[in-house]
Amino acid sequence: MSKPILAVVIGSTRPGRVGPKFAEWFRQRAAAHGSFDVELIDLAQVNLPLLDEPNQPRLHQYVHQHTIDWSLMVAPVDAFVFVTPEYNFGYNAALKNAIDYLALEWADKAAGFVSYGGIAAGTRAVQQLKQVLTALKMVTVAESVNIPFFSQFIDEAGEVRPSDAMTRAADAMLDELARITTLLRPGAGKTAEVAARVG
Image 1 (spheres, one colour):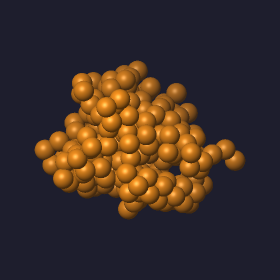
Image 2 (cartoon, helix red, strand yellow; image 1 turned 90 degrees about the vertical axis):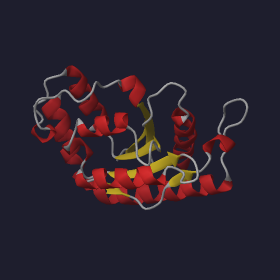
Image 3 (cartoon, rainbow, N blue to C red; image 1 turned 180 degrees about the vertical axis):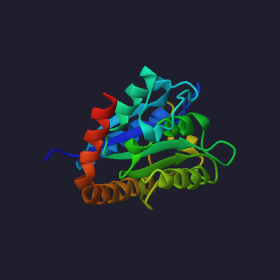
């Protein structure tokens, strides 16, 4: 059986964002962990318009090619890590928009979080995300990577220099994502069904 796929999703899309730096750091950590085949999804490159599908996502009656492409990108993935900033005590609109485009493609998959911000380290954004993802039948893990005052972990060359706490948190989250994904993977037939229906 092939390794499960873990997608690291860069939630921020605005110019000057630091999300890609932390996402790449975590991607490398996840690849070294060895439990997953790891992919990077950048919502700035996916570039979805504000939700423009006329039908409820659960119906899978997509009328736009960008939605079909997004569905086919998400459906084969077994677990997700959302890399998210915190805007005004919550997570950003681009990430909510991307999530809302789909429904069944998210279900029965594990989700973890790398959050960054000021003193709260993005944790208020994560709490809101957990509510939304739970409604979509995702299984969110308790372990997470929370990065306070994030600029202190980026050096002059623009590289992430993680603390020991960040590294330990990343490994603990990956362990739990691997454990939960192993329990959920027998339902992977649903993923193939979704891909067939929208392809």
